[in-house]
Image (cartoon, rainbow, N blue to C red; front, side, top):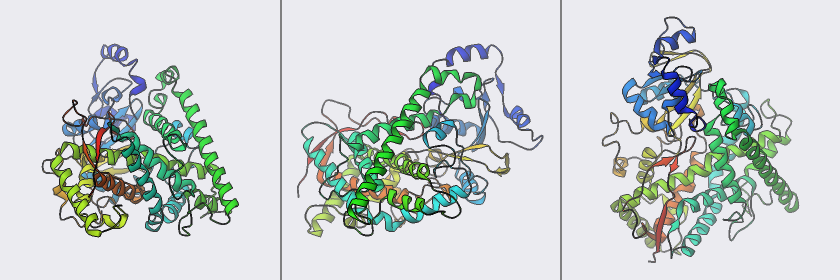
Length: 526
């Protein structure tokens, strides 16, 4: 939860409250929880009434990392009236996501989530830990995001990658806004996976189509989810969101997203019934079925494991996929390209490896997913990119029962933030932790155990039972498009500008480069 709607009134509030007193919340937090002498985590000094909220700033993940260096790997913050436990070490993450995984398996769902996701417990990502979440996750893991399903969409990824390469070629005479084109690419892949598409030659979700509409709506949704509702944590400041138009924007965004999803499902129904069973789901690939097709089949059954999947649940789960996948995929490739521009020797080595593999293969100058396993440097570059630039550096949980974390008491229904970004930059674990060093991953077996959340020093997609089930789907798109961009073009910064890419970031729910990545692409031919 961020600070953005609070900034307008923050100076006056701080000036007023600072005249009253500046206090430490450690012992008072324990009393406020009503657990007597049970040891709660240490708490930094905060402000009356608003607690630590003014300290977070516009980039909470950076602030929390700095605070953990002073106050330890587990600390208690108070955002207004809401207690939040922050865990910032691999040991704390392992206890929360493995040893006590069930106790930390909840997820807070506030008014903004309920507004965008059709009420409480309709989707998977924000659903409370319980039967709906278990059944929704089962459907997603088995029928939408399994390895077999990921492979079934390889032709979609191939076509959308070719469309992206074509767009870069057309703009190669000038600087290319790669950030924008990557979001268009990832949105198009997700749209075709969600609703099906029969186009064999090119995508219908281009720069001016549904992909662009979806991109704008998801940006608004991410901002709203990152802001939350100020009245949840500081009730007497609830008016700030109204004055700043947050509620009006939420209503517009919710209505527009619902209309978009309704159109997608209606178009899917039309194609499906017009073309016969499964027509439109796979463009001739009998093994490929769109997310909508799978979820609507579940809906048509009377029950799925004892719970109902109505149309609202179908739309909410599809929206989960859009929010989790679109900006994340684009952000990873964007960050990788930025780091490679800033480390030209690493780019040259990876390009030489890619080009040698394709030329040796003797194919038609096109990269396929069959080539990716032959590239020794690709995975280390991507893992190092994820270590330094996680799209979601803060993992949010909520305790479902009284529990402990590294010896500290954590009451039931306490919100928990696991700072996976800080863990990945911990100098106690990582040598030269702030540097981009892909070679640190050489010798890794490439099985992506860390990506799966089994290595608690590196959790780019979370871990435990609430880890991201779509990591495999997203990384398949990342691998192919990054390799293709590096194969077909030589890249450099525009002449007369900065000599390196500015790696400053923005965002709260999802983090991305602050400035669009604009590069000059020079076509390369063998």
